Length: 115
Image 1 (cartoon, helix red, strand yellow):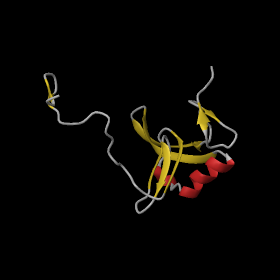
Image 2 (cartoon, rainbow, N blue to C red; image 1 turned 90 degrees about the vertical axis):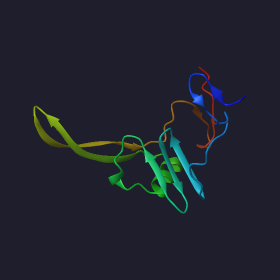
Image 3 (spheres, rainbow, N blue to C red; image 1 turned 180 degrees about the horizontal axis):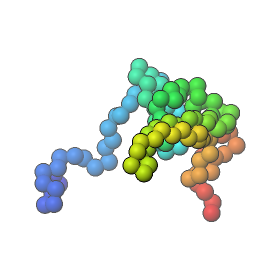
């Protein structure tokens, strides 16, 4: 293949290759978009939870191994009837439940859903 595509022009990318987004010493992934990477630079994501909650590696580890739900308080601003209001919402921030695969007895290994 010459790397030239009629629709996209000159595209020299190679299909199937991945870029390294992060390297470090430990990774905990609870769900899609809910993970913590520990290393020289910390990186974490918790979908729907404000980063002002300052989640730690130990918070993620505790949820993974002991399976408690870690509740978080989200605060923000919202327009309502033409004026600005503040709001606070208590929600499940980190959760061990993974609905896309079956989690096995060890709490770490997953397999397909047999539905």
